Image (tube, rainbow, N blue to C red):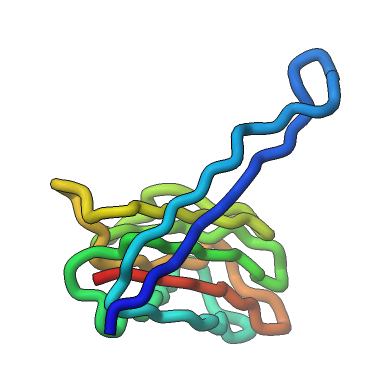
Length: 137
């Protein structure tokens, strides 16, 4: 069954020189998807640094047209983000940070077929959490 998702956003910011009221144009991307995976990965208390976790893709076999990941680690550690089975972190997502993308159609190259993340420090005495939202074909 094909469904769709919509990613919409506006960035509000303080302009150079401190002038308030900066705002990007509103953007919206709607795309069809055949499969979706939404959930939370728990990072157990006292998990060591450099431990990798996979964001499940379920039935998304061709490309993730839309994806969002939210870092809710309890000890405020950045997480390393890995795309397409990379064995090393391609970039870092700060505590409280959000990374997302949306494509209305599959791109002609470099499809996203997997997302994982890694811890960058020892998780504290309480678990941490990373939320993920994946939509694709």
